[in-house]
Image (tube, rainbow, N blue to C red):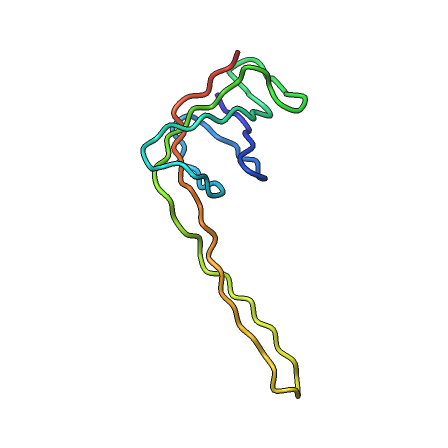
Amino acid sequence: MYAVVEVGTKQYLVNKGDVVEVERQIIAAGEEMLLDKVLLAVSDDKVEVGQPYLKGAVVKAEVVDEIKAKKVISFKYRRRKSSHWKKGHRQKLTRIKIKEIKLS
């Protein structure tokens, strides 16, 4: 069984036992997280599609830890003007482990 869930502004395809890096969530490590924005669920013989979400469907996940993504460098350069700037950014992510996919 797998499901497509929406976390923040992105969608993720998840199975039971998967470890997924999602946009930062303000939840401490070790706590349980309920993902109720389930867009699609596929079990052995049936496919359920939400419009836009499935009613009563919940994906339970446990927060593993909070990490930072790879650094992204932004560099702007103006030729012949002796002008340039360089900035770095590291996005904060939350790593979660999928415990259970429950349909209504």
